[in-house]
Image (tube, rainbow, N blue to C red; front, side):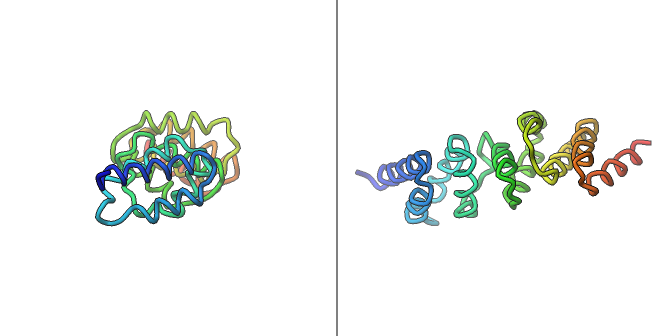
Length: 170
């Protein structure tokens, strides 16, 4: 078996462990398998985990070994924010994912994310971050709607952001 095939086999095995609920073992295998020499050809695995694992597994995996990966090519980047919001855990990956969405000008991804979170009981801090991302994309109406919801849920900073946007419009 070639080195590349062996790498792929181990990555798939690690992903299967994570998906089957053996998250720590999967993370451990990824940690042992991925090196600075093979990270480019291994990067796809993180997108796969983000796409297919349950939210607890996504959060645990990113918290453990997320720093070695480049998540910007992942198609389902909004799921990072979604998962961290569901488990109510602040993380640099939430900011990173929202930055990637804003930089790639993917308002539709932000719309889907907000829609997915709308009926969930989440910390208003996540709504504030989404509202600010909308603002960066120039989507003032959506930004105000999300910030208003965060404000209604008791986040003073969101209330101040609404006033700031309103004063710029007038």
